[in-house]
Image (tube, each protein chain N blue to C red):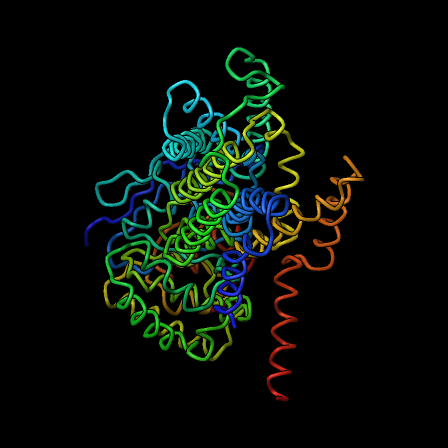
Length: 308
Length: 242
């Protein structure tokens, strides 16, 4: 059952462009951007125990880096998106090196400060970024929606497979041990600062990758994508989907992004609705709604198969 | 015997509390030393300073020829100093076997298959073979103590700091644990044992170090310490029951 569920999802995702076109295909492509962000953030928060509020800012770094490289240097989009991910990773390395030696809320506060600093800087630097109007960016694959969708799907699969691989390796075991007991981990030989940094840089790189992809799908990057409300959305998606499940967090992102389209009439109240959703999730199913639903579905299936 | 660990004039304070005041102690290779003292005397603080969780405010700690008082805990562990905790620090949401694997995997000397083999071997030695695939949170307090000891044995450190290893352990198992520690010592391990179990301390330790209010009160063979007036006054408030 465990392997079947992701396989069914993947088949559905591959067939999606044959079932839905235009608008919903575009919504699904944007959902994949959020799915990469939510799954990588859930690895950081759920598996490593690090709360970063700079994930949207790292996506912004990837987006602006890629956009500027294509516009000013004429680099091909795939190369510029990869460079964007690398630059986000370097920022992650810098912030991580400054804060990850400390314990407690320092990372959360520093990343919150950095995130705002970055948003204000790109808003103020009008000559380079067009400020709050946003920067027009060339679309990838000449705006072909089906191919853009498949590119997003490939990047999403790459993210989940890579992060799952890390979590299943000895590094993943160390990360969970550190989350469980930092002193216990360090006195058993785990270099806690180093492994926290590895996780932070890796997830920052995937946020940057997602940002670069987003820029060339939407065709516009603006400071809006790095505001704290966006970060709140990523948090809501991860908590709703399940902080300790990469796939759960990704599905949370896809569901909430789909829901956003239905809730457009509520304008900014959508965020309040998502906030309430997070509170209810934490109260009623702290491991996430989707992992809980999965357990129920598995039980139902077992019962049904048992009777059949 | 060669000098293995030298603590020189180590001082540590927390706010207004002087936890250690100029403590100097040396430990020789192969010794089995009991570190005793009333609650709040600085025993665990000293162990935390040796294992790198605290940095001494002043003074130095040397292990062999290397000064370790500025090294991080994982660096000290890799030199061969292992420890257990007064309140067990096992990884609750990992399986018992994964808990055992972690210290060996951090060393990186063994292949994964060898690590698995060794962890199953240790699991038998600590009599937790029924619990290998369960999460460590399901273990009792005493079983967690045994698991910590098992984790220590995974990488075979030469210098062991054991903080209250008998707390919560079933009496029958406690005597087996005492025998096991003695056997480890006979096999060459240097052991510093912190415990409030006086009967165990006097039975198995060759030397006792007594702390009180962060100051070294006395240091010597158990028989001498038992009758030391300063110890009786500071720690026991009466005769020592062996």
